[in-house]
Structure formats: C-alpha cells, structure tokens
Image (cartoon, rainbow, N blue to C red; front, top):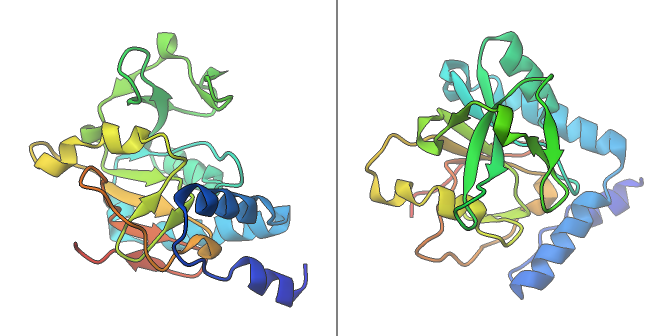
Length: 211
C-alpha cells in the first residue's frame, strides 16, 4: 500500500450521521493489509504492557478480534505467561444486551454466539462480574480524545458497565484499543454512555480528558 493511500485511510473523519460514520470506519479498518494489522497490534501491545496499570493488573477483560478490530492475541500471551487471568465477554443468556465475563485460556472451549463471534461456552466457564476486573480492554469502531467510544451500536458494554456511573462498586480501568485512523474529532455522548479512561493506538496512549 502506498504512503498516499495509507494517509488517506488514516485521515480523521468529522462527525456525521452515526450509522454512516460507523460503516465507513469499519470499512477503513477492514481495508488494512494483514501486515499493517499485525504492526498495529504489536505496537499497541508494546505501549500497553509498559503501563503501570497493566503491570499491576491481575484480572484482565479482553476480547477476540472481529471485523478488522485490533487483535489482542499478543496481549493474551503476555497475560497468561505472567500469571494474569484473562476474561472474555459472553452474551448474557437472560438479561437483554448484557455481558458475562468468562475466564479464558488457549484451551477454552469456544462456541459461536448469535453474531457469529466465538465466546466461551457458559456451561464450562468460570464467570466474573465486570466490577471485579482490574482493567478491561475494549474494541471500538471510533473514538475521540474525551474517551467517548463508538461501538457496533448494540450498547452491550454501556449496559454492562452502567454500575460505574453510580460509583458504588470497584470499577475496572477501561482501555480502548484502536487504529489511529479510527479517531474522530468528537463523538456526541449520551447520559448512559460510559467513557474510556485510555485509548491506545499504534502511535500513542491517550489519557481521556475528564468530562
């Protein structure tokens, strides 16, 4: 891919219709070549694993990459080698648009959920509430520097993390992993949105500005 084309793909989008923006950003990240995806993943892993909050964490919420998302597989390997526990999101079977978090290792039995995304089989899983995790690494479609996150549109993470707005329980640090080209100048936020603490791209770590 030429430098000019790469620059075009990583140009920032200005706010526009939410669904249109989401579709365009998803297309951008899917268009990245495998070697660019690996480079971004490696750079993000290098940045994350030097952070004090990661080094101190014992329980890490993570995800399996889908649809051009940053692949956190190298982070999983580092976590497991350093005796950190990893937990994957699992669609809650009873509560609408809520997530469980199931303990994960390389031999975990995975099944496809209703969206075709692999997740641990609940019948054989050790579950943890979201508030018990030290950090949560989150995929995203778009982000801004205030910590606002554009997801796939289902609201699963916001509903699952709604307890954080009340401040009644311990809460994980929320870390979005993204390609630099997913940055937006601003994202309109709603009262129920739960902002990120950090965003890590292949270029930098962004400490989100407080609202």
